[in-house]
Image 1 (cartoon, rainbow, N blue to C red):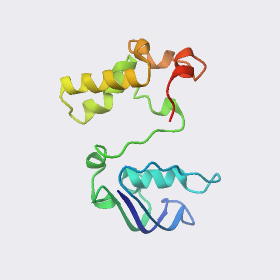
Image 2 (cartoon, rainbow, N blue to C red):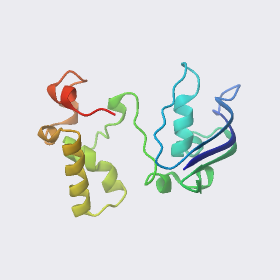
Image 3 (cartoon, one colour):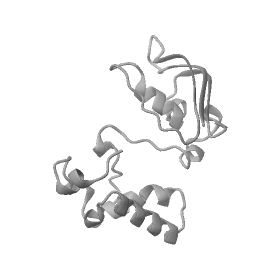
Image 4 (cartoon, rainbow, N blue to C red):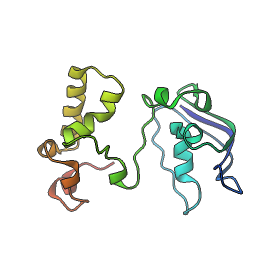
Length: 158
């Protein structure tokens, strides 16, 4: 469950808040899309949920956000990383740059979370199969198409 209680946030150098008096509850298991005009605060909202805001960005956060029962501003980002993930708008911002294959890149987050090797292999194989990209597993992430390749057209998108 994600809960916002009268949350406002202003970036360190901002003259006004990026989020103002946000109150909402998202039940566990619910899929929710956040839409709005440019400048409405969508990435800021996601940053607060992940803990990146305020832990890494600073600024002034007023109110409270709870994710899975944890109060975000009192919980280290490392603890939130096991329950919250973010997908960036630009895919190249997602690539770690530390891995040489798609398989290794998919495993990167699991490695950082200390997942056992056998479990990591099982999960990575499962994800590659679900996305129908097994044939890309040993390719460099930097050699993949931006969306025109055969695998992308056949992949399940949700």
